[in-house]
Amino acid sequence: MNISRIAMIVAAAVVTMPAPAQAQGQAQDWPNRPVHVILPYAAGGSTDVAARFVGEFLSRSLGQQFVIENRTGANGNVAMDAAAKSAPDGYTIMITTEALVSNPHVYKVTFDPLKDFVPVIQLSRQPVVIAVHPSLGVNTLGELVTVVKRDPGMGYGTGSGFGSGQSIVMQWFARIAGIKVDQVAYRGGGQAINDLIAGHVKIGSLGSTPLMPHYRTGALKLLAQSTAARSSSLPDVPTFAEAGIAGLVFDQWVGVFVPPGTPAAIIARLNAELNKALQEPAIRANLLKAAQDPVGGSAEPFAELVRHDFGTFGKLVKELEIKVN
Image 1 (cartoon, one colour):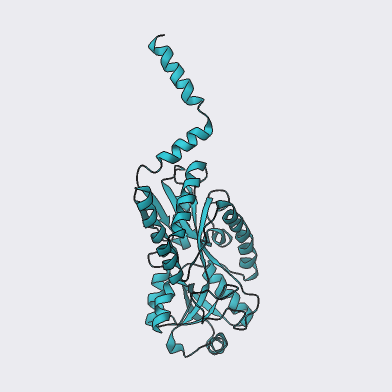
Image 2: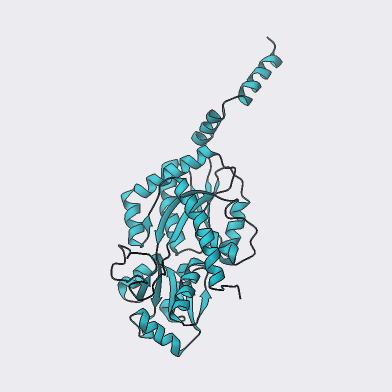
């Protein structure tokens, strides 16, 4: 048999290799170079904290560096656009919040959150918390309502832009309470916290993570949390319902996504490794300390949550008349 005939046989064998075998080979070989982890927000916020915990684990467990890239701008749309256009090879992943499914209802975006991203796993959930500077002199939501009615249009800081979960929670509360407040949007929770502690803004509507150290020291007061039940990390902070604002329930989530076309075997391996990370005692303890409840599990329930929240945000943005100024 001549050399050309042998080459043809080998080539045919490669082409006809069963798809599961090819996929398994891709997963076993992945990753063989650094993986880029795109975050839509600045360092110090909830997304950044969760990403760094699991990124360090993945770097150890998989033997390649998972490089965190904070790409801020346009309430996360800059990073989301970049992630949607990235190569579907497992070497670019995105960790983001529910802003992925709220932004398209507020901004003109270049991506479809349900078609241009594949959910891999939900890392955590946390409440959005209403925080105030002590100088405001309030200890309850009721007292805050009284103060804002005397000074309508007070600014409140968020770690994300208009139409984000933090924005929606505050505007939802304001609608129910009959008050007017104006959003001051920052590029990350860390930046918003700095101005809140300094008193440049007196009110914050933020994910719980960056608030925790300042709550523990008394630098900030927390008046309400948006989840249905009190977070185990915030046992002394009432829910909105307990504070007299019925019907306002909202979970802020952090999750991992890849572009469509990413090999299923790589997605499955990434999901498995991230589940291992979320079971590691130190990571669980650190997330809980940051008031984030670890979630994990398979991709399917997270995908269902993403689809559900896309519809929910569409209704809320319309009802609350949230528009980009």
